[in-house]
Image (cartoon, rainbow, N blue to C red; front, side, top):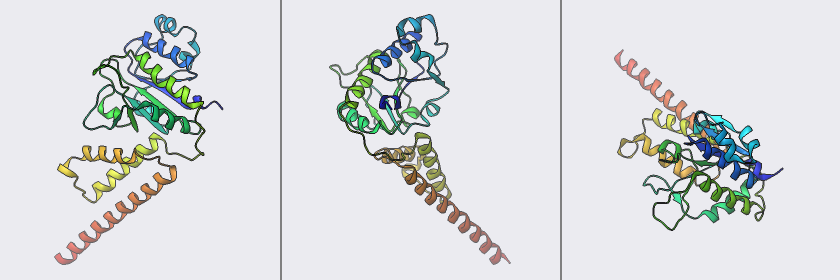
Length: 253
């Protein structure tokens, strides 16, 4: 199997059909076949076909999704891109170590490469779905890369690295969708025990959890272990409250 078949390029709300076609041409050149479009509008136009130039099969096989979460739900690793450095997200500006890491993992894992809107990139809730975020270093402080140029930088770098890196041993890695279910269960368990996060900001604490878990690969068995712990916490919490209510009734009698 060609490991590049495990790479999915995701465009979030691309502005023009021409950019979609140009991206398809880049994918064809770098040996990648999966193209996913999130809310692209009326995209399959003569303009898109003209810009694709020999990559019509990439356009024909593309998939359309209503949200980024749906587009990456079955992926094991999600890499977002940005040109900004934010306070609440860890952004790497060293693409080559990332290329080497992904090249060793792509043989056994589905990897999503996510590109945001041409005007304002990926939104905060979309960046939260990314396990890693890459910012390409450039000669200017505020780079302005065409969408297909950004796709080319990332896909060609990964294409070149794949031929140089031996694969990691296969493991059953948790998908992005399974990670999201785990995060939801952790927050539910914490709510059950009335956990109060710093400054009473659950959303901020959710970002802390994601940043922590995104530092490691999570196998399916790891996620299941954490879900089991959360289930036990919720069960204990309900039993404790039930006993407290019964104790209060007994005292009233």
